Image (cartoon, rainbow, N blue to C red; front, side, top):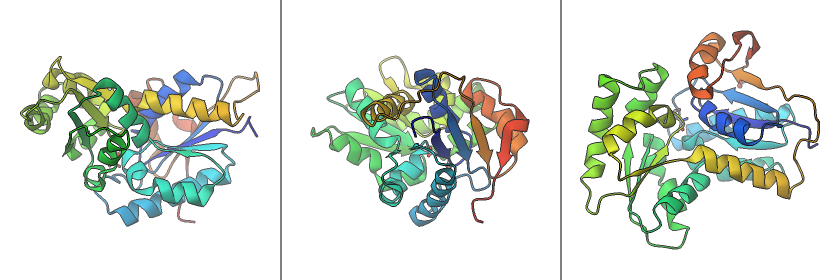
Length: 272
Ligand code: DGL
């Protein structure tokens, strides 16, 4: 069982930022990444719809006998994680919200912590709850930044347009009293805009990205459950998309940080 792959899914290509951290942290593991590109964005949809889509994506990966599932999408983690964990037990299902909250509390133990995410993640309040679960009363403020998803998908991660949009979203957070000490990039697409966000946020605010802490959480579970891949053969990764595999490969490279062969992105239908 330990030689099986780890499944990762996201609403699209943004979750490749999480896969990038996982591959760097667990270079001997095989990954199957599923991007539900036909139905992106999840961030503006209702919780019921996102849960339905997430269950279909997870089921498709389970059919491929993954040993563990990583929900790279913040919105799906925020609304569907308990349902997925219950439905697919005993396969471990890990989301990105709890690791992201942990990283934020480590970066700013007294707060305040600002969270930027999609509308769905902000509305559900999952980051606020996960930060509160650390047992301290840390002030948390949130801001939905839906346009960041579109500009990251366009590759407009730096320059005038990205900066103007970042200012619109982030300046109100900077005006909060007391000023936030950490800013959680609570969406798969936001790490791609890290330079621009850092420029607008200034040097006093630590940017927190859940990819690293999620990779560490995954590693811990693999170790505890004795699920680490034993094979010495070079691992190969599989990519699945529900629409436009060529675009997945082309834009996905920005997020994964390495080339993706379009011929190796398989088109899948989650509704059959
Ligand atoms: N993957 C989503 C998230 O991390 C962002 C894109 C979307 O809205 O589907 O919340």
